[in-house]
Length: 85
Picture 1 (tube, rainbow, N blue to C red):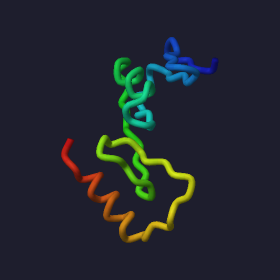
Picture 2: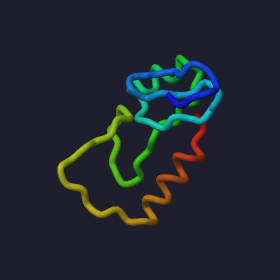
Picture 3: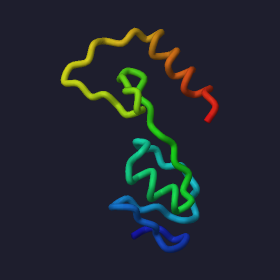
């Protein structure tokens, strides 16, 4: 392993050098979020502006996707990125 700044941290098969505090991007509500959040690694939940989400906040995956209007997608991104947590 090439990390020289300390013992590598691993969640699953993904190593993270403890000296680099770069956020991990992944799906919210998964083991990625649970494991990395417990380790103190900043975690950012992914968001897909061209997919739908259910009332529970989880992605709604369908076999076929209709084209998404770019203006509508931009509004969704702005709404999510400015939403208070």
